[in-house]
Image (cartoon, rainbow, N blue to C red; front, side, top):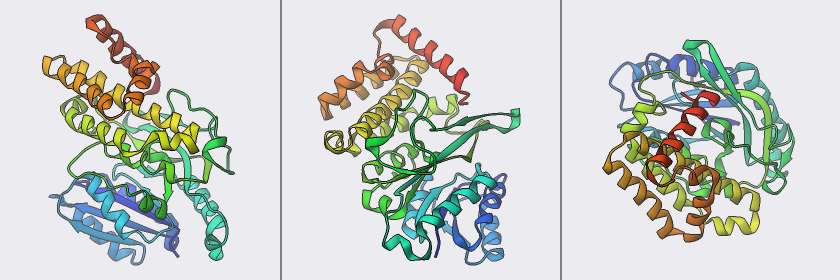
Length: 345
């Protein structure tokens, strides 16, 4: 039995992928590690093959034509044999002590065939670390105020998310069948698709288990990273596209009937994405960028007027759509302050 499938999408990752894969090997035969070589042109494929040869039955090297990060995740989900599914980016890594703890917890829930007879978590949530490794500083993002530690809960019994808290891919380990049931499929050749992965499946989750452990190390610092401000501005059309996909992927009115707190969180998540897109369009400072910002909001209004007005009244996204040059300066100043406080890039 494979308890966890780790999918590692790799594109020209030879400089850092070994650190990532090495951190996953501690799971031994209880896990499978799918190293997805996404049409790399450097030594990525050879490194993947070397690990697959050294760790048969644990590591699989998958070679495919280039389709982007989302395509790698889709491939991993299609092949996954593990009860749970976790994406680990090739420049990130997993903490060993936390890894042992979450694997032990999964085995307690799912071992000896109990998964067929008892309730198991549809989603494990754990902390992640913004790791500015080259600068020697880091920041842990936890959910202690939202979920009870080590116990199962549901969306109707959770606490409240703080403004700095949202469920990103790095914090989540979904049950594989939940992901498949949700129908989530990420677009190819598009950045920022992790937003869709960590959003669309949430209404299909009934049971959640949070572990207060710092499992995932999210490396920040490379100039070519998609979250780098200059890179994000260049790829703003892709960010806008993913924001559109997220806002249309779930009927929040239906979610609210069953899980009001989840619906509130998911609305706020769209608000955050709109804020990020709006801010970076403001930073571009062109008439074309301003037109894109207006059209992005218009598409929300056309799809769901109720959602549109909620977002306009939101403290987050509403403040990124203030009129005039003064409104733009206030928005950008707030963003600079938040980036300094939360150390994201």
